[in-house]
Length: 177
Image (cartoon, rainbow, N blue to C red; front, side):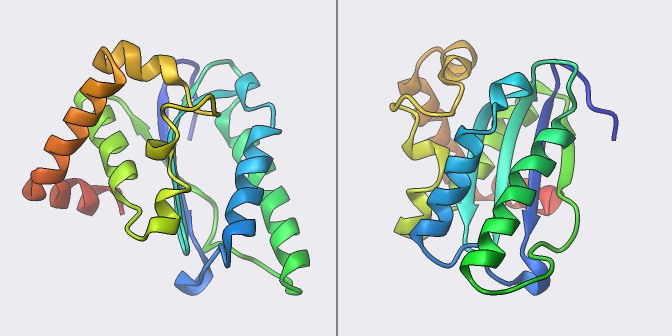
């Protein structure tokens, strides 16, 4: 895929054989730490993320001419090295390369954000989703939500409406996975 400055990308992957890529809170926190220290702002603005036991989702906007792929490769190579060392294992952790979809319509962009934020089901997973971090000073591009929705309150209203629309959610999930 050819990555372009100013475009949005949904990046996702899951564990090999649908296995877990996070075993406990330490694993989740380590990936967040790797992202925080990755100089992500030299590549992307992070719009949304969710980390589940056997897969992850990231929504980013490429902000420079440096391709998103280099950043993704860096953070997940570092995470796999950490994970394999910590869990005394070797080999691949993911099914393959990260899957990437360019998001090229505004309305689709909002649906992808809602989809990513509705993915976590268990309480621990919600702790590792950007929806719980929007009011914090985190890796999330908070300005995006103000520009796109007018306020965080408006975003949460939009998200609640999305949660109610089961039919729309099923269509998006089929298309994204």
